[in-house]
Each structure stands twice: as structure tokens, then as C-alpha cells.
Length: 396
Image (cartoon, rainbow, N blue to C red; front, top):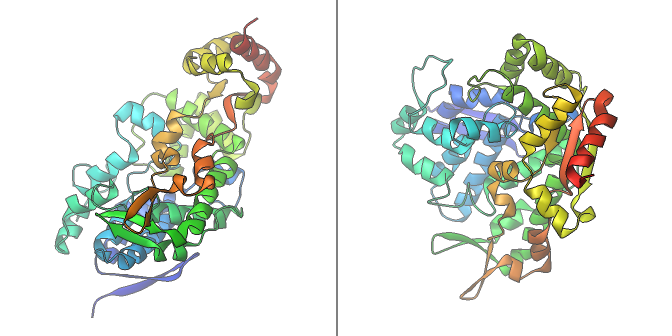
């Protein structure tokens, strides 16, 4: 009799795991995810946000299999792709992705792809069997899984509205305790259709789609891009950035923090500040609405690293001035955020969702964050940094 296990999930109850799914769940690549928080340092603001990438991967696999069944797609291929879609994430999830991309030229999706294809392995583990081997044992081509994760063959795992987003919105809302991520996933799945190998939605599902898009937008502004969370994340990025370069892509959260502490100096201080929540404070934050067109353009053209260095030199403390200009790093981590290519099927016509509802149109025009630039520093340098930052931004 084939070995079958049930894993109790916070959202979906008992999830049946057998065959290839059980083999993959026991792999080091999947188990490593149990040491990586799904929301990185968000727990410093929302103490309940301690759930991991492992839980999310399992939940996304469950959701993908439900969608695949509804669309008469191969349930195993969809479920396996969803289970493996995040194995390339580094410590603290998206926090260090921009830095990793700059150094390695690879996103977490690129690393995931290489691990599945057998081109990249965890350097701290002696392998008996690889993911590619496991897939092969069950007659599954690794390339098919990679194509699905990249959104080339189906949009179930990576699309404008997919299993990944449905799970993380519901799961993140559940663990943070905010009400914004409540979505009607059953209704969304019921109204999904396949049209020319593309996922579309029936008109009767528009209300559920609107609800999900609003949930996504509100979760970003109130949870994922909370100002205090951004400050903590940028402190961690700065500590790694100013350290002697080292490989961190394969580490989990605890291993990275131990590495930083072992380095002493600035890296140890930042690691301890994060451990004990002694975060930098906002010296100045400029909202988009406060700026005229000329000022917006001037800010967009600023060299952030140069500005950080100049202000740091003024106070004589390298690494103690951090400037946040949300933009490229956010869209690298979540490229779907600015996309609204959800399609509605109406008879024989395919219509973009934003043409069917003013809500979708308004969300498309909505800014990712309410601020365009934020300057942070330890409390004792706050007044001084505020003065220099205002001078540099507004002149005078």
C-alpha cells in the first residue's frame, strides 16, 4: 500500500500528501523553507506573522490542484509546480532579493528553475537524490514543471490571478490578523474557464475578482509595505550590503542572522537591533501628494546611494542613513502587482477586467505606496539627518 500522510493546514484543514508530493515534501529544498518566514520581518509589526514559506508552498499546491481539477488540467503537474515554486527563496523571503539579483543576476525564480533542472544544489547538504531524480521516478519532466512556474504553459501558478496569490493573500491575512485578505476563492475557481490555453473568467465572477484585487492592494499598503516593516528590511539589506560579500541564497533566516552576528561590528549591531526591535526611525517621509511635477521628477532622478553616503558622511556614521524609494525592488519581488491583465469572457468576446469595472481601473491607477521617499536613521541622529535630507531634496 502506498504511503499516505495528512498534514493539518491552518486554512484548508487536512491536506493529503502521497506519491511524488510526499517524496518532494521530504526533500532538503522543501524542508529548508520551514526556516524562512513567509513575510520576512513583518512579525516586528504584526507578531502573528511567523508562518513560513513551507506552509505557503503546501497551501499553494493544494489550491493549484483545485484549480487544475476545475479546468481539467493535469492535477499532478499543477500541484508539483506549485509546491516547488518558492524553493529558490533566500532568507527572509523577498527582503534581500534586489541585492541578490544585483550580485548574482538571478531572481528567486531563476534559482528555483536551476534547482529543479539539477543545475544548482544546496551547498551545505550531501545529496542522495535530487528533485530532478524524484520527478523522473514519477515520469515527470523537470522542464514541464519549470515552464509552469514561469507561466509559459499555464497560468495556474504564475498568472494575473493564480493559486500563489490566492493562498498568500488568505494566509497572510489570517496570520497578521488583518481583514483585508478575505477572498472568495471558491467563487473565483468556479468562474474560471480555459480559452485558447488562457485562463479567463465568466462575468458572474466579477464581484469576487474585484474583492481579490482590492484585498491585494490593501494588503500591500497596510502589511507588505508598512513603513516600519520597510525600515527593518532596509536595515537588514544594508547590513548584508556593507559586509564582505558572501553567498546567502541557500541560508534560512536563523543562519543569516548568526552569520551577521559572527562578523561583529556594524553587522552584529544591526542583527541585534532587529532581534530586539531597536529599529531606525523615520527622519523624513515625503508623500507623493505633497510634491509638484518638477519635484517628483527631481526625486526620481536622485542617486539614492550617493545621497545616503553624503548624509552619512555629514553625521560621520556609514550605514546609519537609509533611504527608501519603493519601486524597482518591489516590482522585482512581485511583478504581478502592476499588471491587470485579467480577462473576462462574455459570449464570444474577451474583455479586459478593467474595462468591465471601475474598481479594477482605479486599482490599476493606484500608487504602490503613499510615499515616494523616506529617510531613516537611529533616533539620536534624527534631527541632524532630517536637516541634511531636506536640504538635499528641496535645496537651500
